[in-house]
Length: 461
Image 1 (cartoon, helix red, strand yellow):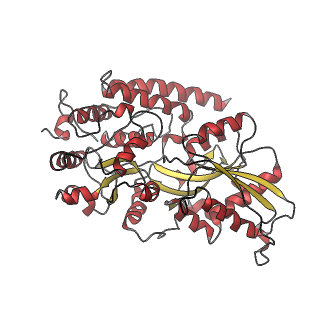
Image 2 (tube, one colour):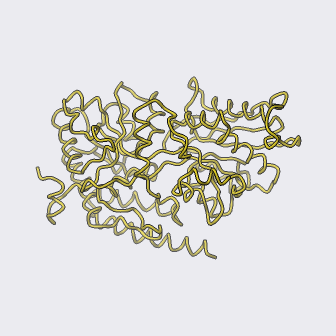
């Protein structure tokens, strides 16, 4: 079999170059305020005696306690009320499947929650639409300097901070290490290297070993059903093709290169060669991760420290899942998109609610006890550079090390919410043979560049 590197040097050969989805029932809970405030708190933490009621909508960002969705969030609220008994916090849990649409309806009907814990993809879009309250007055110089500039880029619109970062972790791949141990091929994985970087050729060799020695196992996965988990396919092709997804100024598509096109061609050929999952055009990110958790897939493309923690209870068979960066064609350093979670405030026109919401966010993120506790409960790393060593686990230590590979994600681009909708249909065209990889990426670039230009024009008005 030809190696991928050789294939890239031959025009006629096909070469290898290269959210967290969760479902849970929604419910509404109201935390009862404590009987009296904490008299020992410093003056700056003393709240006004004026009663205020706010609403917090939360996706299942925290791991459940005793299998009960929202139980941990209620503990946060109860602890918050020890300091601020006059602020009543109404909790509503929403799902990753139906939550986005529920938020859209709430925004359209002027019934948006006061506080939302989400990710930049949606929060930045709301900020650009001037739906959020600025948080600049909450961010001290010490905090500003302790959070990486790449994270502030994902939390800011213009000069206004619209999201207060809490947790992070690089999106990357994961491998079923147990399978490689069973087939005696553990040496094919780059686990002996401190940074675990590896080449596309090494990756292909590992896939071939799974195909030959574990015939009941699908070597790797891909998906193109919807926008969900699209960061996995973006990073996979961008790294295999040694390309950026967007230009450095996030104004144009950069992934429609020859190498990235060949990477997509390789995905198509790998499917035919039974190195990659069949039917990827109709599979969602959650479908592929489910195959991984069932022990049927050796590699999965859309993983992170957060998902690793959340998936402990979802494994159908016992196995050790290990984090890996995406392979690159030439062994160069990978570019990983960061997961970033944070809290934002919808500007519902009530200054008292905004002030109360800021106190709540400050407690969730910065409380000496609950700040770190909350990060751990997400299964992620702290957005603060100085907060490390939260876990005694080699995979988290590696995830901390892998921060060096984090790059700015396309979520901050004008028009991101629209351009991502053009991505998966073009992947589908390539997967079904309706277009070559390069043709699909070029078609995506035309549509996405138009959308970004239109969005920029609207922002500048």
